[in-house]
Length: 314
Ligand SMILES: Cc1cc2nc3c(=O)[nH]c(=O)nc-3n(C[C@H](O)[C@H](O)[C@H](O)COP(=O)(O)OP(=O)(O)OC[C@H]3O[C@@H](n4cnc5c(N)ncnc54)[C@H](O)[C@@H]3O)c2cc1C
Image 1 (tube, rainbow, N blue to C red):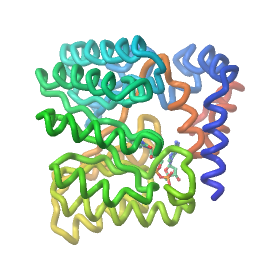
Image 2: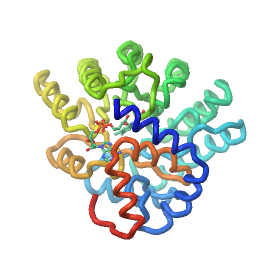
Image 3: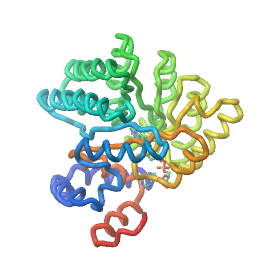
Image 4: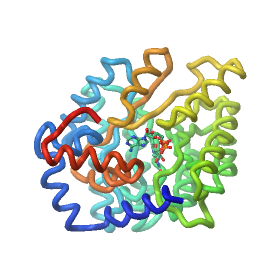
């Protein structure tokens, strides 16, 4: 319950133009500015540098060029062009060929056809260079549309494509079965958005129980699921289930966010598990950053300390 209120509060703050202006001015201004804990940089060059460092330490990666909720065809087309360009740049940089994107960045809230066309253009460029493309999942207002677009493009042969399912949504078991029946790859998350109680579980215990149920279905599916969480209980449950089923660590991967629980990232990786880090970058980092604050109140203290000049480890 407190969790839902907290998410709602930060969701509201993320819509504040004043806060966005202030954060944008100070959050990434210098190498130790507060937002850099969670955002790899504002430019693709900074993201590539961060990615190289992480890769050298044994992590797999997915890069996210931040942006969401574009309102016009022009903005959506521009984002699709940026993504296609990103694929080219990443290809030349030699880092791992894996990107994540949001459909509202490609025009999902403008119209479906624009969004499908933009995603198709990115997938065609990505396929030429053997890139994997993951569609992030946004609020429940977009779940049907996202799965529908995923399925449309998958059925047209674009199968270098995966999607995300949120354990918090009550509908998710049916969605997991729909995507795995197609042969699609799923990243399982708890869900970062404030949702109405008729569509989502409000209590953390219910979200966690759903996460474990869905994780079982996914590991049984054999479709190389990504278990994306920083929750040691969810990770232990995954390891225990994989062991009970005799699944080697090559049958699934863990995913975590850049800058979150770096201790756990290192521990899992050095124990021989595959860990993929989600590396966000770009100028439009504010909504993503606010969702990270909403997940953990201690992050607010981290930001305040950073602003006040005490930049001790967090
Ligand atoms: C790779 C990846 C991709 C994701 N993609 C999506 C997506 O497409 N759609 C979507 O809705 N959500 C996405 N999420 C976010 C996800 O839904 C959760 O909001 C987020 O991962 C927090 O949940 P948790 O599983 O870590 O568990 P929680 O129970 O929230 O947290 C468990 C523990 O992890 C640590 N922790 C969690 N979050 C933070 C944080 N922000 N800062 C510091 N510590 C933290 C804390 O120690 C906490 O006690 C993604 C998450 C990951 C890891």
